[in-house]
Image 1 (tube, rainbow, N blue to C red):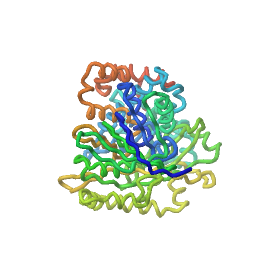
Image 2: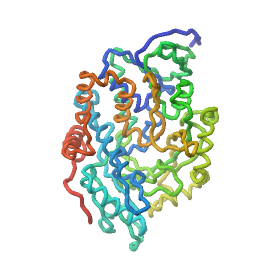
Image 3: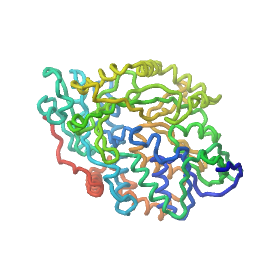
Image 4: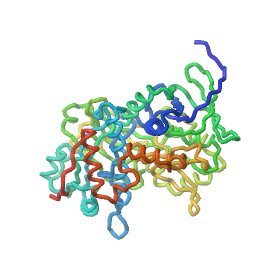
Length: 508
């Protein structure tokens, strides 16, 4: 094929950078709200959702705070805070509402392609941890979003719930677990592909794979000039867009820096790599049917909470353990080793240095993780699967996560664990930085982005009516309205083919 450097200019209403779950979600919302808007998506790889949204790169839990202990910290007075858990649980219910709407509208054909019921469990051992989990349960079971949670310290019952975890465990070891059968496994890669399959059939939508956005510049009239290169033909294009969304995972920070918007100054990124142990023995895989989350090691990042994870990937049951954290200077799994040093600018060097000094324990933890031997990884696995056989498990490389570093008036810079939406003052450009629980709360994140970037349209009766069609609880709080939450969860579960809620919390 002949290479061409011919440069052409076209205009678009919106350009979305990155073909993962965030751009897919925003693309569908814009298509529903503005069906005649011209939208173009650019993805640097040659397939959809191949980075953070891919099933092997993403934890895929359907983060709803049912089992993730990092969302429920123990306070100095011994009590357990559940505010963050409530917020995340509410946002995941909103995601399920939206997906259910898309199923009813025929946008998503078969929900079992991307979401299935899998019990969510927390599991701990040792007197101190058992005490913590009991307090957590007592606090959470009082809130309606966690209705139906079961708790037990009984070895015999836990043997029924999680035989793989209990087999070979010392009978005198203090253990405890919580269990919620309404937990889900979500394949965000499959969901992204389903959404893009629909969008590609729309007359004003274009998806460009193997296209890399090389530069973007704000024009005097407020629109954006975007330079794109086809990675295969080397052909270059210039587009003019009224609105730009940077949803490129770890690649979002460099593009945000190129935009030169004032609101993006001072942000840095701290990349964390990951690995899984993947079970290759069908008999072992068949013994486990749950997502079992434990407590994170001291100094570890929240996304490194260990879990023994039943997954459904491409219709086949899988079992993973991890993740094992590590450090890489890449911002993307398919990125460059120069990503981190290239991201350091005059406006963010102080926050990055300050955050680094404040997180020396994290740095040491990541170095220790990188130095782990295969036997070290198996030893960590045996804390959850005492009878684990090294021959049954293989190492799988997970995705890259880039944690947000931002300015802080006290510390100079702080490391944030979560997602951060950065938007220009005029709403013409928005970027998503950070990681977990990102994908699971993508619908709520995109709603907030639309409210920020399209403030006039959001206030119109037409948009409000459409929002309520897409998300029936729109404008109301599922966290505060138990009746509404119950009705919403029941409807979503029916449409998505998920396990229905039991009526009472149970302690054994």
